[in-house]
Length: 106
Image 1 (cartoon, one colour):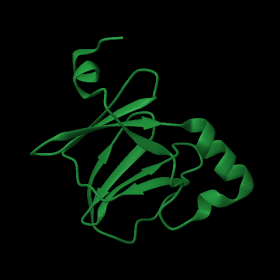
Image 2 (cartoon, one colour; image 1 turned 90 degrees about the horizontal axis):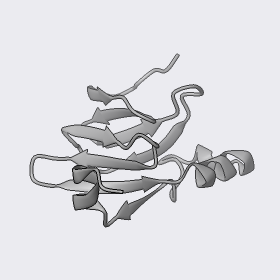
Image 3 (spheres, helix red, strand yellow; image 1 turned 180 degrees about the vertical axis):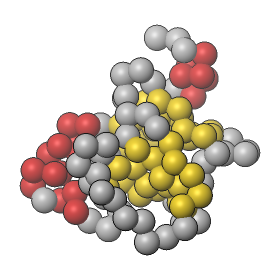
């Protein structure tokens, strides 16, 4: 069970559980409910690629493509570095595949 001690504005499905609040977006692991990463953005939508490697965060003004690195998260969880306040710092990197992702090119 997961408890939220803040106002929940929305949830997003996909490879990770996305939770939007007034302070931003948090991604959680579906099985363990561990915090993966907290990001200071409030998207309207979150879209995941089928592989779970890319996520598109769409706001009213723009969108951002993030590349999720599950191996980095696994290493951080094993070493205990994942328990930080904002999660695993290197769990995502901003990607420059914006147009390609939305057009579903390879």
